[in-house]
Length: 132
Image (cartoon, rainbow, N blue to C red; front, side, top):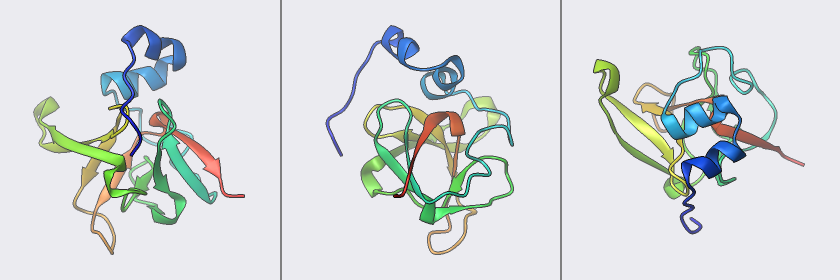
């Protein structure tokens, strides 16, 4: 993974649109079935909207029926970080970009094989590079 990126909240606000900022810097969640990538089927790489780090491959994306883009594993093991999230009276595992600490979503142990994991990711936290 590349060197950590640190920016002020002002710098992030200047770079991101209000929805992207709310999700990635304030840990908001976009409404289900509204993000641009929940029903997206092109081949390529999903990147962090904040820093451009490659996070997930379309090869590991699956339809979880939840209304958010879901992947069974990150592109690189160290590309994402996880930490406990006990907000809103729930016990979850938050997923963040390892490079810039952007909130991406959460990971759950109810995904498909081969990992059994479901990385449930907000579209607002992603950019997409189409495979050429």
